[in-house]
Image (cartoon, rainbow, N blue to C red):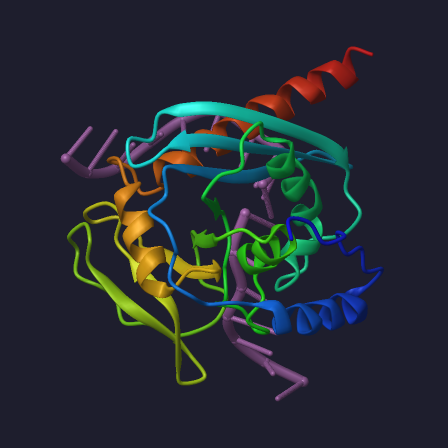
Length: 228
DNA sequence: GCGACAG
DNA sequence: ATCTTGTCGC
């Protein structure tokens, strides 16, 4: 109940079949317990490798607690709608490697706001059987009306007449963030959690911190290979 | 055929 | 995501 095998489709056709099969396991239910420990996971890329980092934070204080790193060869190209097959594997391994299992994981990408309702956050959540939330910097699918300029303003993100997430202002005057439930969470959970993680920047603290680490490691890796 | 298109 | 210098605004 904490680990399905990581799918490794060889092409888009197989990947789409995986997305459709995983949909049967998707659960959009309210977060069961109030999170005490949350995690954020992200990845950076070099010519042929992916550097994934997962970080643990106390919640709601957001004190950094621990991190885990996974570096491996990339096995899938970036194709819009199939991001989970490019960075998902390494990100999942990094989360599994954490010394403690978080109550919730935030990912840099979409949850159900996806053509097949199976974005990065949803896929990672199902494969790990953990509550997840998608926190993307731009839209993949759906329509929304621009929210007010103030922090906390939001509007519903609709796709095919269905509410799949929200366009949320995490900083006054800044571009919105597109949040959507991944697995075992709801749109309300996603908005509440993401907004509570906003600390003066558009990108929420857990994701910002993890993204920085990912880039530092990537540069170190490139320097190491070059001087070799 | 044209435009859209997470990271 | 990655490449890549300076520059506009608070």
